Image 1: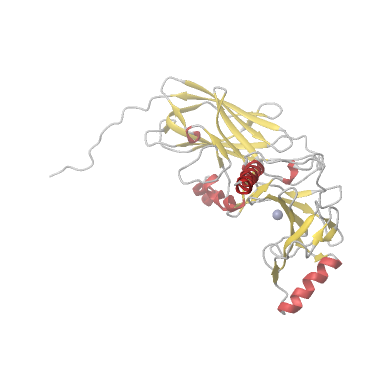
Image 2: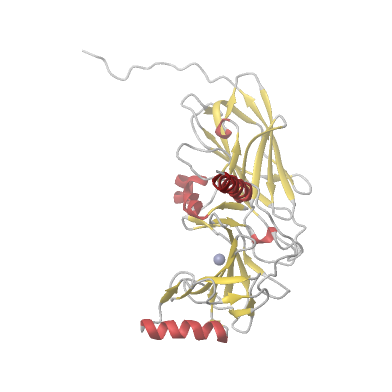
Length: 369
Ligand SMILES: [Zn+2]
């Protein structure tokens, strides 16, 4: 039947289109439309926090931008309000805008108040609910938004310490994307990350560091611009490396997260983490990303350049989970790189020397009778 077969071809074609258009949404490298989006706050912009900062039990999923109750907040792009919440908890007064044409959601949190049109909509719903606390999911046609439209003003509502805008860009799969990747010259940053410490840990029962089964921590010693070193490490067996770092920017007294780091052994990349793009529901797996027992003791965050079993974070590329198997008599060239989102890089170079552990001496501590 010609009708049925043309329907069938049509169906196949639609499926084909769906597949072709859906694949990019799941691709690892997201699209960053430079110049298409408007930053929600007019320049000059001062960031008090960036993407990937280690907060209690999670990574910070966006940017914190300084402002006060007179600082207007504008919509990044055309779309509609998909969610709006008035609350004294969490994100406080917050707007979520869905951008159907770019498949992103932008989030504007801790607002002191909404714009008059948006405020009218919220107040109506508050009266209906006879409650200040409302969490609304408007239909796409209810509150349409244009790029650059006033949304409200910066504030300190919800769990916020000081007035700021918390701003996020998420994709259709609820992955947080680093907003700085969308706005090229938003902040001046020609300064590379600072490297504080390197940690080295045994990762197999036979592993030894300086002849003992123990963690070692070193202060990174500066060796010229953006280059650091630590003393040669004597090791044996499977070991892993950890990095304590932060980022800085020009004309900013705040410190920021270093969003990408990697380790190379003899010129080959062994492990990399990249916190510029990760699924929102994984943000709480952050405790597996840092050396948590050490953090509990000291409040110092060493980020692992290896992955331990049960770490399901999707921010890594690695060989052999980032474990280096050190053989006796071999010398390894180690290079650790810390990257910020603006392309500034710091490095730590040092050597690992394979040393066989001393023969174990068996000392019986009991006599079987
Ligand atoms: Zn924030």
